[in-house]
Length: 267
Image 1 (cartoon, rainbow, N blue to C red):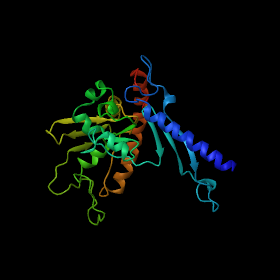
Image 2 (cartoon, rainbow, N blue to C red; image 1 turned 135 degrees about the vertical axis):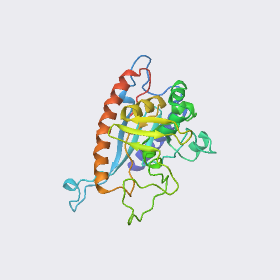
Image 3 (cartoon, helix red, strand yellow; image 1 turned 180 degrees about the vertical axis):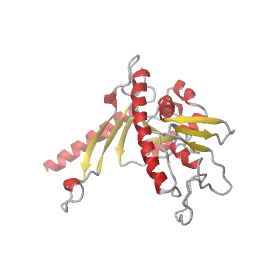
Image 4 (cartoon, rainbow, N blue to C red; image 1 turned 60 degrees about the vertical axis):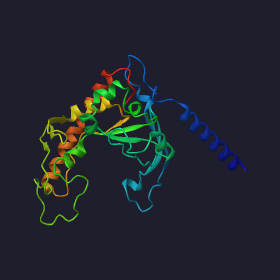
């Protein structure tokens, strides 16, 4: 009886918390944003709920298993994990209203930093109050870094890759009828716009600057996405390069967090 009572109380509390969360206007007033101050770090944290029991057979470090569920608390709301994250590439779900996405159970949306950089531009989103406000989405948002475009505009395979790479191992392989539009070097990537052919430069620092202005709750570090066709040697060099870029992303993120006062904290 005690367990049933506690369960009912917990359920009621969860319902009340959910109602409170829905009633919060986090588009206009994201948590942890104070005028003249950097976004508060305590507005973003992970609350663990359940974790896999340690393995009796000793697999993992000392039998430890790290799979877990929980809640990601962000300035624009909470994400209960595991979560399905729909992709609103250019700050919109095609043919679906933000309110409908909520009704369908979406907790958060992901947009593409490179495409938003091309249009309408990160400055427009910044002046609009950030990604969530720009698309009238009262919930958390993600942005990728532009790293996927290293693949889609580089090898030209778009979103489809052949799984059989027999006789195709080459660091310069290009899809038939495609032109390479992404060129990687140690410092970053030069992109040729698929819209008008203009050249654009992305580096760890530039990607962080763009994503800070777009204003998503969670940003991705700038990386090089390789293909199955790249040689092992290239894959290894790419991983090492991406690690160096990640270190630069973290440093630039910290600098921008202190510099861009009045904005909610971004992770």
